[in-house]
Image (cartoon, rainbow, N blue to C red; front, side, top):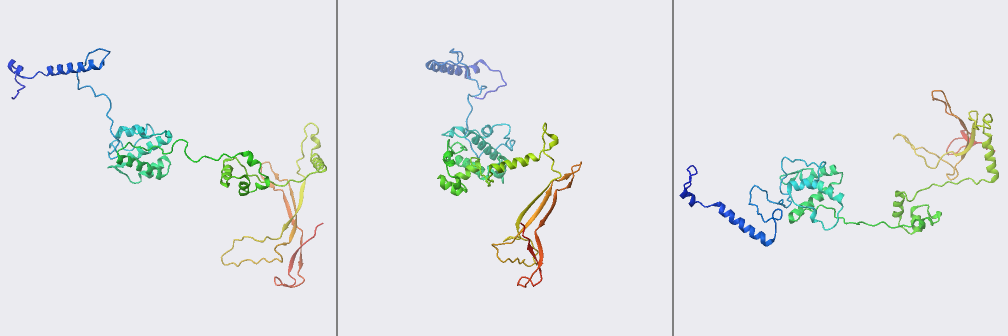
Length: 359
């Protein structure tokens, strides 16, 4: 039967049409009976049943599984990881719950970082395919190795293929990793000093690995010390040194403000023995030069020469410019003599440097 909505409804036609309100009343009665059986209240403990209204949203959000095959919305572009949680961004785009898939306590810092890496990778996909150099860019963004970013993306794809929630958490459980060996420092201190010259002998005497001692040295638990010999001073030597120090006092400043003399009129003189040459020396030469020939009669007994050095205190003017560096001179105790006989190294009569004996 065709119904013309432009015509007014007659009483006969009105009786022929079904009454929708009657069906709603039946639904309300049925719902009221179920509510009485369950003992539930809809509002304020009353048995008042609200009518069904399509304008009211359905309670509770619909949870969708996370799927990497779904393209990111075009308006999102690169995900902003600075002003929001990466997990919330992923859930807003793709839905799904990630944190329920972990059977043990995880490192929260590493977990958040992995989520941010995953969100950054999802933002760099085009038609479900990761763009070129996306993993390199994400690795530089988080200052990590590219293999770590690739592993996170690989694990996410494996979870998607198996139909399980995405698990990008750190796979290191609590209290994981090799534990450090507890070393008793008192046992190390009891090792004799003559056996502590090298790490190898030290480790053998202490009964610990050499790598452990090396790590303790880097951490500052152990320290390296270079020891030099000190002169053995007798009581008379100590008193003579003290008298010499007292002789350097300026008598004009005594006794209220004692000060030492400025030593500007003192020249320090000292002598020392030096070898004339060394067994091995390095030279920088042009490619066409011949190697120098340095002969000695006995390389284990090289001639020595005594030098006399004289230095004084440097001088500076009012502007702070050095006018005298204090270096007076350095003189060797040698002399030149003609060779009395010929040899394979030089002919007879060649001037040869000879040392002068100094008493």
